[in-house]
Amino acid sequence: MKRFELTPEALNDLQGIWEFVSEDSFDAADRVLGDFYRAFDRLAESPGIGHKREDLTKQDVLFWSVHRYLVIYGRNSRPLLIVAVLHGSRDVKKLLKKR
Image 1 (cartoon, rainbow, N blue to C red):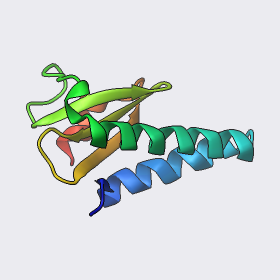
Image 2: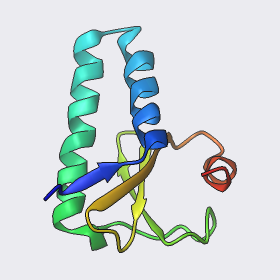
Image 3: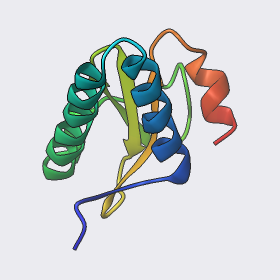
Image 4: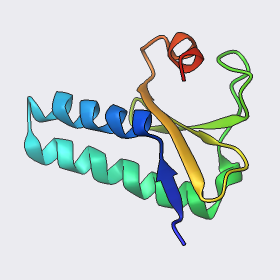
């Protein structure tokens, strides 16, 4: 059984992050991506460690920070559903309304 699953939008988020970081360094982009996947594994093991952000969304999701990014995932999903991976400086509230 899979421990976590990414929505197509979350997969696109990761691809965009990798492409952005790789403009400076392919190695750094690979490290950042690895950090995300380690976080996904950790969240799958202990999904309750994230926190709610009712200021950003009423959806049943939790948030976890990795570098300057927010991993947004389904609170009670099995396997753990990664909904989005967004930079904290973006308009997260607006972006989540579209998902």
